[in-house]
Every structure is written in C-alpha cells, then in structure tokens.
Image 1: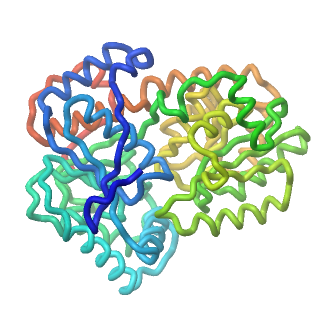
Image 2: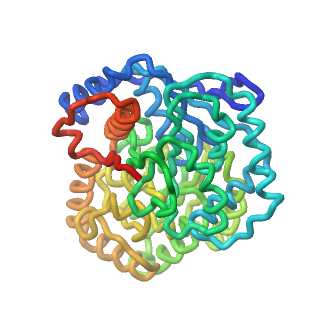
Image 3: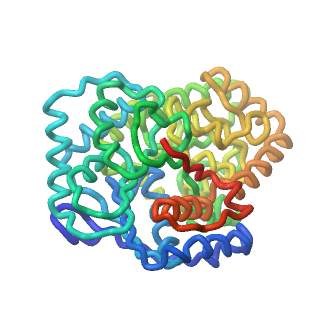
Length: 437
C-alpha cells in the first residue's frame, strides 16, 4: 500500500514489527546485541529509496528491515521513485547490461534515465541522517541532491562482475558521489570504484513473514491443491521472476529430463510481475510457449492470486527447490527453500554459492544436465535430501535472517557516524565487513 506524498516520490506505508518476536528464532543474545548497536543511533532519520514497493527480493527485505529499524528507535522511512514506462524499460536494460548482457547505451536512453531522476530529485527537500539508495534506477539522486548533509549509501543488489563497460562507465560517477556503498559479495565491487567505504552485506529473509513462517502440512496440502498441484506426487519448485537470467526455459528442460525417471513429476514455477520489470510478461509468454501445454507444468504469478502464503506452501511441499540462475545477485529464494528444510539445487553463480554448501545443504550446478542429474539423485535418496534440508535450515538461521541484516546496517551506520561501539562475539560472525576502498 502506498500513500502519495509528493509528485516525485511515493511514501510506502509499512506494518509494525517487534524485535522481541524474533527472540524464539534467533535467541535473546542476538536481540540484546541489536539493542546495544541501536543505542547510539536513537532518533536518527533514515530513508530508503527504491524503484518499487513489491515484486522481487529488494522490496521484500525492506518491508521487514525498515519496521525493525523503527522498532529499535530509528526514524526510518521508505520512498519509491516515480517514472514512466520508458524510464523503467531503460533501467531494465541497464540492469541487464550491468549483469553482463550486451546492450547499446544510446543518448536517448541516458536522457530518459536522467530526466526521470531530476523529476524525483526536485521534490527531495527533507534532511536525513542516512539515505540508502537501492540499485541503479535512482542512483543519480545523490548528485542531484548534493545539498543534503546526511550520509548517503548506495546499495547494489546486482552482480557486477561481468558488467558492460559502457553502462558501468556511465553509472560510476553517480555512485562515487556517495559516502559508502553496500555490495552482496566482495567480488561484486568494481576495482575502479573510488568511494569512502565499502560494506559487504548479504540479503536476508524474514522468518516470521507469511512466506517463511511455520505452516501446517494440512494447510500446505490444501493450498497447493487449490492450484491444481497434487500434493501426493513429487514436485520441483522454482520461485523467481520470469527473466532470462533465472533460466525458466532451462528449468523446464531439467523437469523433462527428470520426468523420464519419475513420470509423476510436477513442475511449479512462481514469478512476481513487478512494476519496474516491463519484460516480465514477455518472458512469461516465452516460458509458457516452451511449456507447450504440459498439464504438469504450472506457471503461476501474483496475477493468479499467488502471494507469500502460497509460495510458502509450494516450497514446503516441494521435493526439491531449484534456483537455476545464470546470473544472480544473491537469490533470496535459495535461503527460503533451505529455511523450509528443503535441499536446494542452484546455479553456481553470484550469491548462490554463499548460501549453498555444495553436497552439504544442496548442490551447485553449471548446466541443465548436471541440474537434472542432481535432482534425480536427491529424488532417489530421500533420506539424503532430508538431511541436506535440515543442515540448510540451520545455516540460514545463523547467517541469512532479517536480524542479521539489521545488525549489519546498524554496524555501518555507527561506523559512518564515528560512534565507538565495541565489537561483540556475534558481530565477529556478521557479514558486514566494512573496509576502506
């Protein structure tokens, strides 16, 4: 739900969350540490800026992170930028190019991108202590709002290791205006980026959200049945946007190979159609064409009424969870699947190896054939699959929950403010490894 405050940006209305509710999941010591880190930051004004309030992992994380920031005493807000279809088509092209796709950056595209950011910047008049700008879409805002005296942080959720040189060369001057930048992995940091501070912070899932909260087996069976999936037959599940980098066509090919050994197999592919992804419907149609009316291939999205509760059920009922990405900044659905106690097979790219211990909590694969072979192996050895899923759930508990995400942001804010906060044992295990660039 969004409440329009200005012609430029929209303020996102958020629900309330209490940190104490997470204590049964993560332990009282973790909660006490977060309260200690937040103490020097009481009342700080924090603004997150992104391109959409729904669809995709960035929006999902912010719906938890910002209420938790408020709960520990920060005055946190979230705004989304406005833009027309042409702007979001350009920024989708930019996103693809930054992940390695060969695209031509034209003067008209640059003009569309900059004009939309000017339209948003002109209404930015508030003062904040910390402004976190997510991904390329609003990146020029810092340069255009240079009179704001707060600390500005660019949060990149994209794998930049194969970024198109022209696109990165165009974007870099805007990023270098920031006080700090956050990346998911050290490998994503471009060597020619000159900026005051780099933080490495992996994304995280909310264990209490409708997508990840405990669900009874009866409820899960009932929900998947509503969408025509037989809960008594094995299923492969991939939850991702319909996007070439998620390789939905390859997932269908994997399913067809595995089905030769397991004729009753079903495939469930769930994607969210986001407002900043104009290619989503086009690639959904390509995926549908590739499925060729197979009644055991289920292509679902938010347009079919599939939300977080339904995704929870599909993942819980999955025999194997897939995330066969060709490029992946992180892939929250990997942690989601592991949190459900499922073995996850993921592409050996980007942030997926950070989450999957190959052969321990799942498998990392480099091809359709390898993915199919590992899937068949897990389906033939269900005890092995269960053991992998249990190990994966504990890995997520310690590294990839929302409380870890909050801890990492609080640590960075304190460092940027020059607050002397003594490190704790828990912090030494955190992923916010801030170092001078």
